[in-house]
Length: 190
Image 1 (cartoon, one colour):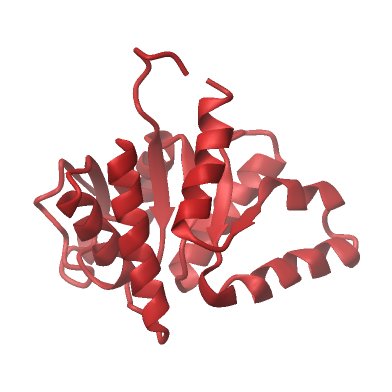
Image 2 (tube, one colour; image 1 turned 30 degrees about the vertical axis):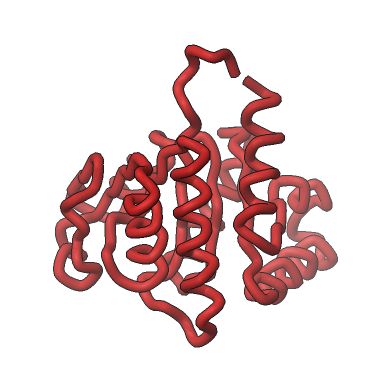
């Protein structure tokens, strides 16, 4: 990446709930802070609740650029965070995911539920099909993603995917480790 190149945009998929472990909110807050301090843009689901709200508020507090994308039907449920640097309302979930993906250089998945899993598997499938080469990181706070990676290993062991599927996923334990991995993968390739 040259000095004049734009700073990376990092798409964060995460829960609209805080989760049972306070470490999830702490990690989301820390990740939003380190992204902003790095000068990188946060691209996320535009909610002001759960881990989504924590990562966005932290990025904003640290002076970061924030790009939120929310479908109109979730404006109330996810409390659309209108004070972002850029706030986009889409008609549906498919458009939301497309806008988030198209406006990012890498994906980091924090703990979350079915929506986060949907987003993760979609970008993983696209990578497997050769449709993109963006890094996909799982921020594995307190081992949250262990069962998911075990499932991926099971899928491979049962012959439904090649072992190369693992190569598209990088597990990191801390926000700082995520940032270091992103620096290595994004800045070295630019």
